[in-house]
Structures are given as structure tokens and as C-alpha cells.
Image (cartoon, rainbow, N blue to C red):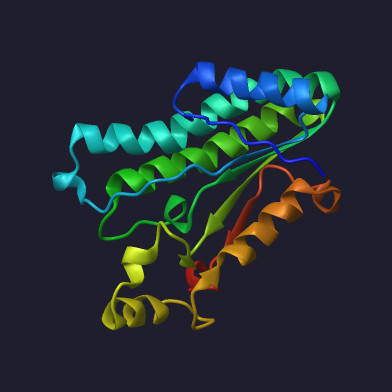
Length: 196
């Protein structure tokens, strides 16, 4: 298959329009959107500045919204499509920190549900994926020392950190025809952490 790379700032509407135009021009269609841009913050409410709040909302919520808005007309015209938003278990539950991150990931979760309801009649499926602790560059600082790792592993019934491939497999499922009757759903991939 053919793979292409283009630079995209998810917070810029013009970048999304250019990316969609490039994709349709290059491949004659656009079947799948995976919104997975991410950043994090750990501040509690009183430590969260307006800049921190805005940065989290811009990348997660605004980025997912603009991406969705950019692909919807193409997918409506095609009569099908799958949009997958990467949220987090932090979009489902609260914690002792990361106020802006939780709020932004919660917004992504509800964007997926709302969009799923609006465009189901057009053959467009929209779902969210909610990873728990996974070994990715973004989460490396969380597991920087043995104590931090042990603290987090104690919260995971399967007793280990997930892999990027395990998260990707969930995304592939939602992108595929195997999930043709799945929309507005939350796929939680967290080793059982939120089941407790």
C-alpha cells in the first residue's frame, strides 16, 4: 500500500482542510479518521492556569472537533466512514490531579457520542478509545522509577502496563468492518483498571 505523511497542526482549521484535500486528491476517498494527537498536564485545579487549560482543550477537544468537522462532508458524500477519537480512562473517571487533561478527554468522549448520533443515518460510525496505562513516549515519565511503576501496577488487575500495539489493535477493530454495528461506544483498554 501507499503511505503519505503531511504536517498537521490539529488546532488549525486550515491545516485540517489541507490534510483532507490532500488525502482525497491522493487516495480518491477518506474512510477513516483517527484523532490521536495528545499532550498531558498533571496540575490540580488550583495549579491549573488558563494557559494550561487552553492548551489541553486545544489539542484534545478542539483538535478532535476540527478533524471531525473536516471529514464529515466527505464521509457523508461517500455514504460511510469511521471516526475514532482517542480519549483516555481519564475521560471516564476523576483523579487527584490532571484537571485540564481529564476535562479535555471527557469532552472528546462526548464529542464522539454526539457525533455518532448526528451521523449514524449517513453511515458514519464514531467511537472513542480509552486507554489506561500504556508504554508510550507520552507516559514514560509516569514510570520513571520503580516506586511510581509499582504504584500504578497496583491499580491494574492484569498487573502490567499495556503496549502501544494493544491500543492500536482496538483502533484497528473500530476502523474495520468487524465493528460495522458499533457506534457511539467507548472501547476501554486498561487491563481492568476502571472495572474496580
